[in-house]
Figure (cartoon, rainbow, N blue to C red):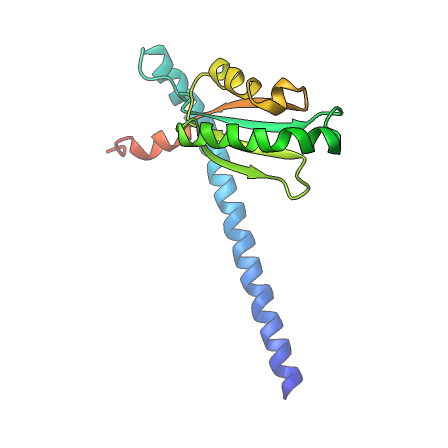
Length: 155
């Protein structure tokens, strides 16, 4: 009897997984079908002088340690870096900050829309000044295709 119950539970789990996978495939297919329409809508909005499709509202800054970042160099610089980064956070320039588990990469979500301003602020941090960290800056903004949800339904 226990074996039958375990088999029944396994069958239910597999069936639920299949339903979830089918739903995911359906969602991806729906999005893929609407992508050309979304692009056409975004181009149309741009041509009529409407709002830009995706304004930059934040900067995603990914900082990676360089080859110069030896343990002794980091030991000297990290206390200064932490204080300077905390100041940027308290000034509202950094919204969120994270680190990879191996502590070789930091990720900041910055409350800035200007990449040059983000670059200048990050380069002034002690790790940047010492050449121990380099940042990749990625401008990000609201998910443009959400505009489709705001359009009046066709009558």
